[in-house]
Image (cartoon, rainbow, N blue to C red):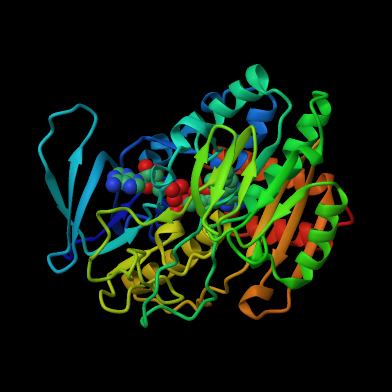
Length: 421
Ligand SMILES: Cc1cc2nc3c(=O)[nH]c(=O)nc-3n(C[C@H](O)[C@H](O)[C@H](O)COP(=O)(O)OP(=O)(O)OC[C@H]3O[C@@H](n4cnc5c(N)ncnc54)[C@H](O)[C@@H]3O)c2cc1C
């Protein structure tokens, strides 16, 4: 009797849960799927700011359990700290973490899907712990909520990114180099925070300065969109500071940048460098930073049984959940073709930004562009529909446990691209 192929998925947030569910959809019970994550719930990061501005602790609504979905698929979940990948022996070393004191275990695989995201390197920014704020998880989101509702004095607010160090490897597909990991969130926050300030009679867009290490903020939005967005942002009264090179330190009353300049601010809302996890660095299938090298079918060229999806993959630039989502669709189909011996046609990854951002007051923006990668799509819209689509995606993701139907993304694009909003 032929033994079933063992697929091991590392990480179970957006990319890990999505690909686990898609693999089951494609393969049924033709493979054994095991997933490892250190926590047994999803952090629904993109909607944390909306909860914060509505004075809800995001931990109450933005974390949801996924185990029932994996169980119903017949997939196995292990709650553990992943510590090492031995690519030559095809095994992963991990330590179960439900209780302290567990000993290290290992698990073998036929196929490995790496979906462990990145380390968000706040610890590399001097002064962040004492003086910084951010929205990248429910703890930090709740800290912002408490500050805004209890302590905010109406002072200046700086929002922006530290310098991102993108990995390099001659084996990676050619993609443009970004100086910030993901600047959709700072732009989105600038809009929704200005709305919050107005509603609470604490100020407006003039309280906020957006900054970027790059020549232009959100460069992956492409020139056509930026030519609309940037004049609008300055027309609304936001401050704007570019070419900061990176953050040197944060102190009580402001930020010192690596270009030698400073910005005074009561609140410093920061997005750091997205850094690969230390256990990935130096492995034989990663680039010079530790991002997993793949082709545009999400497969490593030297270890063809290794795939990567989401933020951990070198080609995922910017570090955007919607890119990870497309990668999960591709990788699950590639694996299904191989394991089932079929030859369904699969298109390679066509990188693009598809993004729904909150602007406050039930309005949002919709961005769909591949111009930064040399394409000709450039769509920016603002109104009520993008906000509804952003909220609708969260509901669909939670209700279906990450198994967004194959028409989900194209339908959102269709509505976003063609609806008058
Ligand atoms: C404030 C904010 C707003 C955003 N808004 C949007 C948006 O509107 N649209 C969008 O498309 N994207 C958005 N993004 C980006 C999006 O959140 C990320 O691209 C997405 O979370 C990446 O998913 P991932 O599964 O690859 O990684 P992650 O979400 O980081 O998940 C990685 C998983 O791996 C696990 N893991 C890591 N290391 C280990 C280990 N050693 N052992 C065990 N488990 C481990 C973690 O516990 C985690 O569950 C936003 C990001 C931020 C910070």
